[in-house]
Image (cartoon, rainbow, N blue to C red):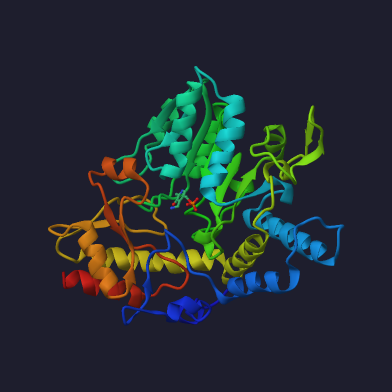
Length: 402
Ligand code: PMP
């Protein structure tokens, strides 16, 4: 608790001392990926220097260390999400793989012609493409929860889409394109009342606000390590244990079986049955360190700091002639999207890059929502624990000089 000191926090992140094109790096691309604190970088190096083995606990000392690192990491993810036990956590490469896992296992087992699922207009392509592909194959239909001109889901319209045909509602907790915080708890309650399961995309939420699966009560939640100060190539799927145990395996191979003959295979229960082959052991340990780092800073404190930055940035951007903020959601986290009249988006991105300022300038893998808002692309600064008022000022200086 106490005083939130972003300047002090910056010292934990070696890359923030980097110069790019001779300019100090200003990292405002946290929605795409976050930078890593030294603790995470050191944790990964420690694994390879002192613990590296495949995970088969009983084999030898290093196997025991690696197994402990991996399973402790699973317990940390569970604790971070308020999940009831570590076996509700499946390690994946990230959010994309977690959603594909649900589509290919639960989806393939439970969705058929005549069924429907609901997605929201805000979704990242990672929560659209797996479902559209599966729907084309299995013949279920996809309904889209609409969004108003501010970029908020129209909850009444969403509620009207829920009927007995709907088996799943899959939506994001925070929009990576507009920053909208969706009313996840209410939408989840409505889905459950209609007999549908809920998959929450937590890719953009878990780094910005406290997320507790006991409070929100989703059936599945997906996250990416690299968007929460952890390594790339590791993420997690939380799933209710009864659901996970009833779902068929996805990929087949070692680690996920109890017994194999050429005639018959007996699978482990969850989560092992979804983790075929050698997992990303070192990066799982790195993810756990990242989550501990976030917990130590305090999620409420991070949330308050980022809200202050976002409010400041919105105020500064509104004061710039020609700048149009895209989306004014009731509640915002993480990102602000804007366009500048008379300057195309790639041009603004390049002007910022020349000054060492990293933002996304494009469609953010969320074309349906940008088109709903009447644009094909935006400039998108996105915020993290180490950003400062000075970072926002640097961005605004470039816009003034366009
Ligand atoms: N969902 C949302 C809302 C995202 O912002 C992202 C990443 N931009 C993803 C899913 C996909 O995450 P990943 O690429 O780490 O799998």
